Length: 87
Image (cartoon, rainbow, N blue to C red; front, top):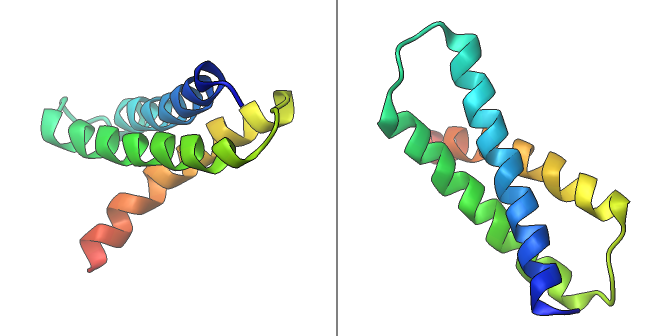
């Protein structure tokens, strides 16, 4: 798999996490808190790196893989801060 394709998968997973964080803030009716958003950005970066590494072992990816990366970026960003906070 080409490095650009890996970067695209990583960016899509990252974008999923950012979208989750932004819509979470819109739904909260609270003022903007940069610290909370940066925590979500960190989780989204972890999701992006994880998907980039995971897809480095495949030959090619399809639209299904792109949607899976986006949805997983949403899920990792939702769950990772809660797991870290529980530890």
